[in-house]
Length: 225
Image (cartoon, rainbow, N blue to C red; front, side, top):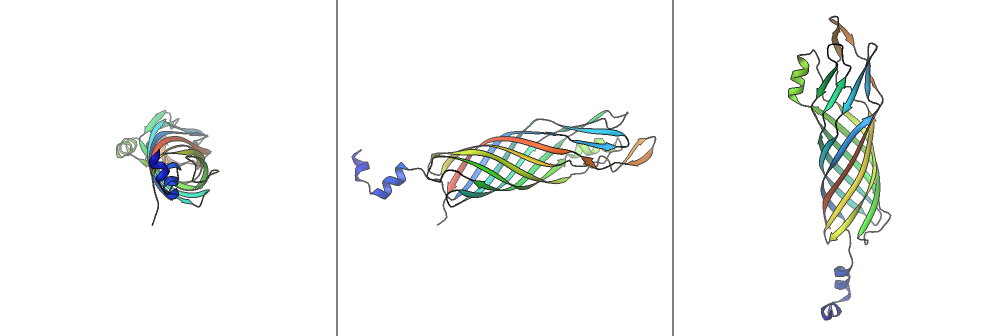
């Protein structure tokens, strides 16, 4: 107590008052669920795409701008298999092993200033997703006359969360987020050999893909000189 009374005012403020720093690097883990009206129509047949529930890992780099705004760049990865249904009479279903790589750039808004220990926030921004199909899946698909590709999809992101400053420079972050995009074609297939040996083109996919995510992570914060 005597030490606290002796410290200069500026030093006491640093000891007693939390303050979120300008820059942040955070690593997180969580869950990813992809749903929505996701299918492809081909010669009077509706091909369905069903995604498995998956775990997710990622990191973010954030710059806090002033007291209430910020920007963040995020990368995340999930191993998210997909089952293709009603592909053909001879192939009623086929499982595709894939890695989903997400890249996003978001604008954040904090209702509370950086002097609060707990800072809720909301965000929105653009992003892009790579659906990378594993080599063993492509080999198995080729044996059935299917040649899937690795599609990229642009998407829109939004969500919210909160940061809790545990000690100076170290925080815990919890975040809910969602992304929406059109349905990837996957090259399933550009032409089909299932209609009595005749190549029949597939139509474009239709519907919307919704990706809900939740993650918890640790954040390191610092200021530039």
